[in-house]
Each structure stands twice: as structure tokens, then as C-alpha cells.
Length: 202
Image 1 (cartoon, rainbow, N blue to C red):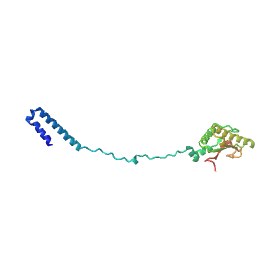
Image 2: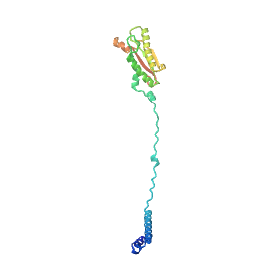
Image 3: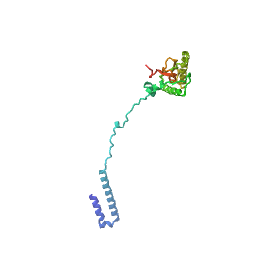
Image 4: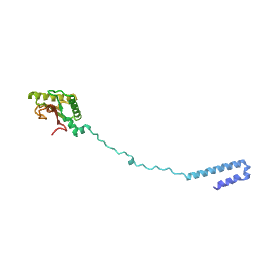
């Protein structure tokens, strides 16, 4: 910085103070040297811009997960549980010399219809029975009417009649052999057998 020091010395000299023109030139020259020195320092200390680190493209990629939809009906059809079997095989009972369905019998048949709707491959055989009182012919006809009554209600619930078979056995297959009102009440019934589908009896 010798030039800057020389300029400052000239600025301090008394004979220069008397000449305004010379003084003005010295001040302008000094200011130019100061600005030039500052620019030189700034250029020497300039930092280089940082180069961003390359990103790992593999880490930013999202793995593709394949999803296979599951058919609920297929599971219920191929993997029925014990509750479905029990619902389908639950008996209904009738009053003496009656083929009308009681409210309890209608509820049971409604539960069966729900299982049949969700598992279309199932079919049922409805077996009507009677107690021992009355003639064989009369009890056979009565048992057929009882089976037909259950089928009609299932059809009204939307189950195809092609999936429902009926048969009457009269008094030939009693549940109980005892001659009593309680035994006869158990013998007046409809039974249900699964004839096709995953619950069909072997």
C-alpha cells in the first residue's frame, strides 16, 4: 500500500491545502486507490459455491406392493364354519295336527335363508315328520305339508326352489320312542340336510 501512504502524506502537506484543485485531484486519486484495494481483497477471499451432493435415486423410489383382492363369498363357500352348519341343520317344530309355521320356526328359517344367500352352492333337503297318532296315510300327507311349508317360506326369502328338495316320512322316523306329549312334540318336526356344497354330508 505505498501509493496510499504517499497520497495521505501529500494530503497532510500545508502547501497543498492552499490549492483547491490539487487537493481535489489528490482526494479523488486516494478514493480510487482505496476502492481498488478493497476490490482486490474481495476477489481473493471469494468462496466457491457448494455443489449439492448427488441424491441416491434408489432410496427415493417407493416399492410397488401387489394386492390381490379376496372374494368374501369364495371364502364363505369353501370354508364354512360350524355355526353355519348348525344354522342350516336346526330343526323346526309344529303343533298337533298342524303344518302352519310358528313365529319361532319362521325365525329359524330366516337364519337359514341368510346362509343360503351368502353361499349359493348350498342346497337343502327338507324332511317332514309326524308323531305316531293318526293313520300312516294321514301322517305321511301331514309330514309332506310340513316340509312344503318350510320350502315356501325359504322361496319367499329369495332362495331358488331348485336348491330346495322336500320329502315326507310320516311317523316312520321318530326322534323319541316314548309315548308322551313331550316326545310327540319333538317328533312333529322338519329336519334339514345339506345335499350339495361345502357342507354336504358325505
